[in-house]
Image 1 (cartoon, rainbow, N blue to C red):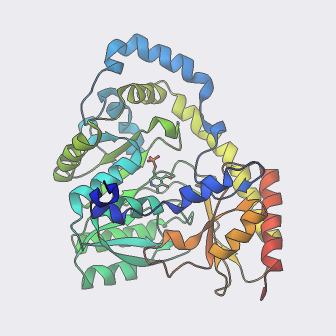
Image 2 (image 1 turned 45 degrees about the vertical axis):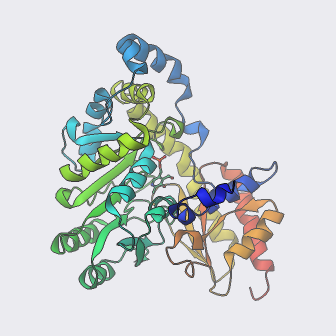
Length: 396
Ligand SMILES: Cc1ncc(COP(=O)(O)O)c(C=O)c1O
């Protein structure tokens, strides 16, 4: 039997996740990886887990181990109310839905919204995982140009004026892969444009709590809640392995996302949701966030310092106020995919920028750097090494 022939047409649209492929190569001993996008294990509140488990068992007994509602474990939905309020979203627990990571919401959104050939507007570049989630549903993408302040509103307006766009997917704060943040004035303009064309925004916000300088900016969804699906996650603030995400959406979208989730996994792990509820309501999250910030801030500062010190002329990079990434643009003749091969031979790796573009001809001279997983000392050495590799290339 030729099992390959059994695969659906849809399956052909599921490309390998290139970052995961790079991560397999770079997991070899001695390799320094600037390629990952995962939180440091040091950011996990491991010391409180025994107590959390104990409280959950005492408080919820067998309920924590039972099937639960697709919408989510109610105490967690209640616990998320003040967190959403901070983002300008005044919602009741009933309007908050729990998902298996925000990735689970992205896939379900693709399922309920995208018909083959539909136009989806994304930032250029954007989160690879969103493209991977949407691709099987065969959309076409309009990549909207961004600058140092993120998505450029004029280009969004042009796209919405001239096309029937199914939805716009944005990561306005500490974007993956660039680290850029859309300032308040631009958010107001983007909200105005979305409202004007009665468009639908998917706002993905996993990083806003990881702010190392500057001040908090409220979400675009808070300006136009009836036109927005707001997605977030506890992956960067608790433990990504627990797979706890959540979203807020207009009622009809919430209804269909819930039905889609029933088909995918019935509900997110009840035990993990109960742990998350306790983590928030017992005040641990509030204590943990400053600790995570103190862990990451010096790493990011060191990476920016080292880029300044060691990169040759012709390179520019983002200067984010938070998040987990820095985006580097090199001279246009450089193909970062090829440079990454040389780097891997020298035991260092990054993610070539082109994987983050809906149009793979773009971003060839760009790369994404992550700073959460290694110490400031290793960050300095690795950027020095990277700078030396770039200096040794022909035409540099
Ligand atoms: C922009 C963005 N959205 C979604 C996710 C997925 O997060 P989760 O662990 O909640 O599925 C990530 C993870 O890196 C991300 O960067």
